[in-house]
Length: 98
Length: 152
Image 1 (tube, rainbow over the protein chains, first blue to last red):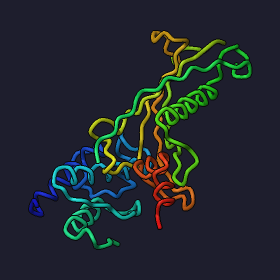
Image 2 (image 1 turned 90 degrees about the vertical axis):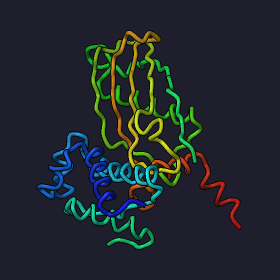
Image 3 (image 1 turned 180 degrees about the vertical axis):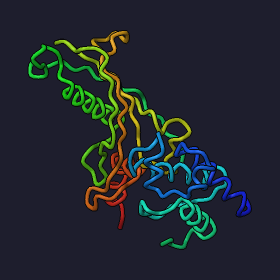
């Protein structure tokens, strides 16, 4: 299993690819999911956002054999918290995140 | 489980008199009905039934009208554009399917009349909550029913 820093870099890179926004932009402003949908040219609604999460999760499974399913998140959740929840789910997949 | 492959599906429809507007060509909203019929044909071709406990709903349509459609036959071609290839895995997770659909005048591929990308999401029909494409495929193939029927 990759270390936490590698995993965080991987998650940020993949999520950035799937939402179509640079990593730096995601982190520098720590935008909310609602803002992210508005800013991204690839997304128009929350279904597109869920697909971005799903593809990031699929990447984890294919590249590292890790199974993660994110809980439902409200649209005012900041990206930094999403990443933190993702990492927590990777470390402890049985636990139900809030 | 392994990646899944779906074919492009072609459906021929005859333009009905009531499809035409005052200019004598197919109304733009009717073209959307042709696209919907194309997606139903796509499901039927792949042995996927509608009306199960997980249903497909359109979440976005992007459509270009390229030429007018006169009375006669039209051909609707439907292909699942995304997820496809390695991205479509029955063991994976997807919440959105994107279909590219084209309506042609007759059989010739040079006469493109309508081109559209239609995004589809999936809902649990009872709870109205988001479901995955993989859940939809399981139900639409009858796997869920078969599983229930064989359970003790």
